[in-house]
Length: 131
Image (cartoon, rainbow, N blue to C red; front, side, top):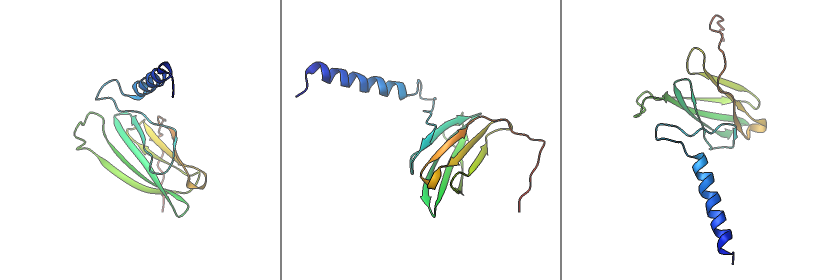
C-alpha cells in the first residue's frame, strides 16, 4: 500500500518523537506541564519535590489529587498526598520549599487542569488566616 521509504520515514519520526519525550536517565522524571483533561497527569519537579497531579470533574468542579515526594527518595517513602476541589478558574498552590511553589488552575467549566506557575516567590513574612 505505502512505499517502503514512506513506512521507514514514519517509523523514524515515531522513534525521534519517543526519544525526545524520554528522560535522559532513570533518575530524571518526565515533565508534563500545561493543560490536561480529566484523569491525565501533570508531572513535574518543583524545588526538591517531584509532583504528580490529576483531576476528576464532578459537581462543576475540578476534584484534584496530588502526590509529592522528595526527588532523591527512590523508594518514595516520603510520599504524601492532598485532595481538594477547585471551582472553574480557581487556583491552588502547593509549596515545595520556602521559595518554590506549584500552582494549579481549574479550567472553564471544569474541563481542564493547568499548571500555572511552577516556580514563584513566596512571601513568608505575611500570614493569612481563614475561617
